[in-house]
Length: 478
Image (cartoon, rainbow, N blue to C red; front, side, top):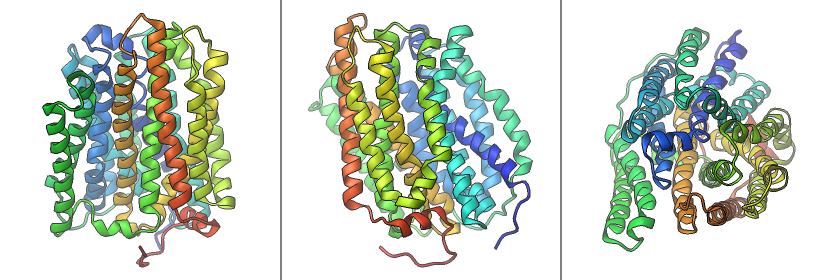
């Protein structure tokens, strides 16, 4: 058993801050998108690439980040990730064209892919000695993710309204430097021998990027067009190649045996659908607030602040306790169904709607669903992995969330555009388009909830296991 680190709670603050910032990077640009669209020349349909350039690279490289964390050492990869994140932030803030902006966001995604799994590995090392402390640390760390995602919308509004949209990237520079200075609080991890599956990382990232690109372009060129079919076929071929590589090489990026960890598959499926419903919700809700209700950047961000407060309260004080009492399965399945209910409510938005009637209550219901499902899903996915695969398990579950986010946003953007969301200035058609996206997200969340309740193995014992460190060297069953 490792020695207890006396500075572990201060180290947790560093790790939670990193998680908060990494996830905030997926959302802080939300409120700034209309201003970026004007300055850089994005079309309404292309605008999502400011988001997806980050999450595709982030999600595609998380497995590589987890592998590097296990081999090179988690603290070294954590430091490297922040250096890359700062570089990407500088590029994104200085962009004068759409393609440079997308490139900057992609570089930020590389940094995030190194930070997220290494932070999770460090957290497990710091608190593995005590199941109660680990559960509390995981709750605080888990709360930082959705809170960062929602708080990013608010902070993006502050910067865009009173400074300039470039500040949504500039803010990462001083925070990144401060985080690098605080890494002395983190435990040092020795490197170990092993190889890195670069080809597998390239295949999975390229496959995901091509799939999203095909979905984004399909409404313009046609779902049955030769280009769309070839792109989707190419994406499928790359992803199949990835699994072939994993099965055939000696030290794969994702050993397929890891899927024998109990509940890993069902938890990752739930996480995929959670991301596919949650991220499109805040994306289109923000556009509804600004482009239909006429909110300014700051007003739009402030309108979503109640969601942040609810997320923080439930994730830090309630969800973890509920998980120990009733188990992970009811919270994951029930949370997804509650999220679906909030999205159905949001789908009733009107061109002449108001924040208090059309947005606030429905958004709080959706946030409640997210707060119930996210931490139990994360902890269930991590619970059975042995310590030497902690970075891998973290990389897989973060990958599935971001893959779900990217594909969900791409698919629902296509749906929204087909229903009128590209007709700026036409409030009824804009609203119809956004409403259709909320309906689609609700269907995704409802499917996730039902499948979880039907498929996932779960009971109170499983909940205790998810909150406790995995036994060293314990064999896992299918």
